[in-house]
Length: 560
Image 1 (cartoon, rainbow, N blue to C red):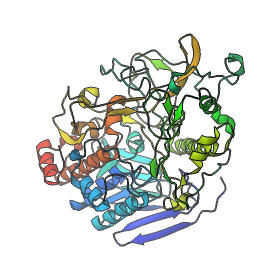
Image 2: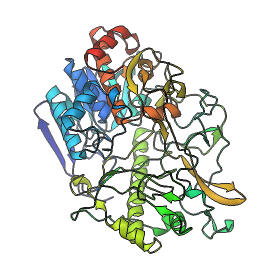
Image 3: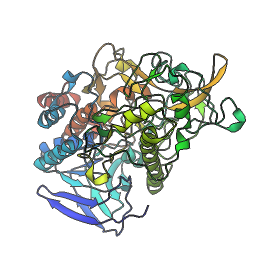
Image 4: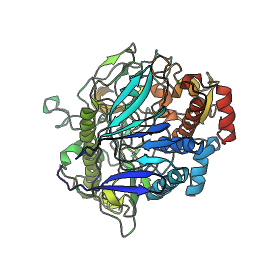
């Protein structure tokens, strides 16, 4: 993409270093022009400008540690400032500590402004004296004696530290440090989870399944020789309970408005109405289907999208989630295979970081083209029933949000990336409190939640049709449950000075519950606290006495 970029260096009062790449269109990765070799030294290095990273950095700095927050892009706050303002709270009584302080200062735990959310993070980081480096893409890591010595970035900057926190959604720093991880869905027998693997029948069986209508998957209805319609996987799905390397679908959490000053849904470059052929067929398949433009679980109803003032999410059989479009995002690899035995954990970078960023850039823009095209299709294409078209046209992008990226969110919703494999793996049994972590560093309570992982051809009632697979929303019926300290630190044999509060050690099923922004904030604070303790006592992260950590977390207001 050809665009004019201008690099500006701005110094804020609290050593707030920012490198801004000005653009009117969202991008994932901005290539570096001129490298400027420089080295910084600090106590705690936090990589990832997410909510978890911001809170972790604030906490470490408040405990007197020189702290540097390094963000891949030009923002802090991750999804909290990137569109996801309808926060998935679970049990709000589990939110304490810095997360609670943040929401109180913001004035709301949900339905807030994305711009206000980011500004508050910037304010709190400045108050704490955190050095913030923006626009820094990780290039390499130096290890010595099972410890990260330094992290180098594409700009030419190297940051040395005693403790590191990987707060990225993908786990890039963790992987560069050769910490074990996995991608995708475990087979059902790996951890004896009813929600593991493919084709779950305990939840979402009838939700967003094209109203269980026999919609043909082929370009020419019922003619296999005509080929599959776009956005349907050509790969044969596995058997119930088998694992695979698929991750749940991503989307952008658009901030919408129906006010007069709304920005009409843009027609993206590369727009192709044929991409929405399956949706067009579904919209016209049965006149009894009711389109609610919101969440629904009632028979013969569908979204096909959520349109509301504020944060708008996926809501439909064919909606804003790009099902199957994110499988290569976590580490650049994907094989459309299934397995009944879980493969060994991965270590290292199967795809070099520079190449991985290029892969993600393409995926990022494909999601923009798909999602903007979907809204343009629904509001303009004559294949869409006229009444529905007019309803969609009443909405547009909120002109008060994301002004520097054309009012489109700058953050893709990475619902699942790499997941560390440490000495303690959080599983469905933890979420259902059949297994209790005795070293709690925070509580989670949201239902085990996964968006669809694939859209496939199936035989149902003697007809060849299409179904979505991989979605579930299973409640944690026994209430909030503790997240283990051991699940946010690597195995000691792999790395002794790293915390991973986002891409933590959890199964696909359990991660679906833990992966909520308030929980990431909670785990970020606990990681920042533990980092300060490890530094004070010259210990590895695995050697931090839990009793001492617990006492300090309780004083900070954490709910354990």
